[in-house]
Image (cartoon, rainbow, N blue to C red):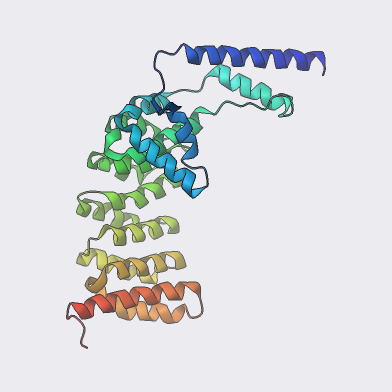
Length: 291
């Protein structure tokens, strides 16, 4: 190891010690559950193993309101220049010399937003902090997902997010508007999203309209018109949503049958088949189709 590398290692190590000491001196202690800190469960929530993730989600919910102040501090945090310098030196010296890395603030904020999503209405105090993150290209998706689960009062934030400059945030807003309560208020913005120039936005909006459970003539007409969309994913999403509308969508069956024939031999054809069957079964039960 050269003299410069030794100096760098020493500087990085000293920085790590200072950061660790600063963390210990913080007046706001991290909440614990059975002696295990909240951060442990935050790191396991998206671990990639079903049982581990389920246990993490259950534990986060068990923290309840005790977790919220700490989550807000995480959401409001700013990247420490000292931590950034440490990670940069560690990267420069290669992982063979320094294996430790501090998690970035963005990573921890994603974890915090995900935890707020898990807590739902209990995390209402975090709404202002989450709202500030909607404009972040990396964090907007997670902020929208959390806000949708927290409270009906976040509805304006979700509709505003439909116009975000960041695609992931726009699509998240269209997808999570299906959680809006009362359901009817989400119909107008989703109908507007269904006319977007982005095919993915139209597809997500079509799915959300079906998932809302509002089977109004306007929704049925818009979804039926989307069966002619130039994009296959949009057409199939509209078909599936019409299937969820049940007997109320009986007028769309001829168009669905036409789409079904055009998808001969494709994986999408089975999904359209299921949609038609769902509509016809529900309509027959309601006496809307002749037997």
